[in-house]
Length: 259
Image 1 (tube, rainbow, N blue to C red):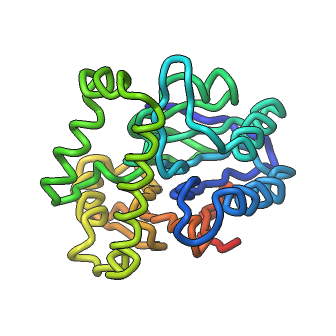
Image 2 (cartoon, helix red, strand yellow):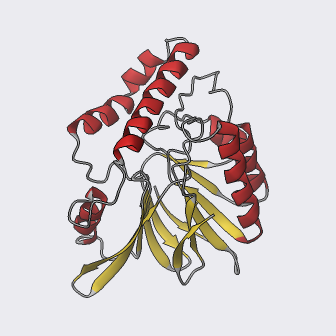
């Protein structure tokens, strides 16, 4: 998605990702929503726009007439923002890419299936969840292709929601526990981080970009990317499971902060 976003004077733009609402490994799903909604309350007075860069839900599959149980606090807060004239951009993640139009219609947010590319207060941004930015895992590549396949979604929709939700949360929680035990999200270094290497290649042919913003890796990172006399800054937003990190841009500077 390509856009130019107009922000009122004195307002800021906020960014967060990877809340994984519904995950029960660290705290109750309700408590995780309460924490995030308290943060949304704190930023609302000076928020000109809110970007949520994917995996806000740990699992989401949207039937045409049925949506997953829960998440009412978070969805109500998004509706409160959009009803107040604050745009909310909700990106597909690799855990919640099966969103249709319910959240747009009910909460007023804008669903972003892939990238968002455009100007914000005079700076050019490139944003997406980050799962499609050079991940070398073939299993992840084919899984992403399968989950994005319309035929697979059509077939999955014929399974009873109780079974699909049970399977989705079982798979997600086991995967999260494995990564927790192995500390698999630690920073790998500039040469091994696939999002860093992807950004360097992309910036070589898109030198107009000032900021790259990604989620997905659950790590916080600020890294300057150079190409000749041009430079951009890459930010990885961290997560809202244990560290509660977010980004804020005031028109002059982008900062990573902790709630």
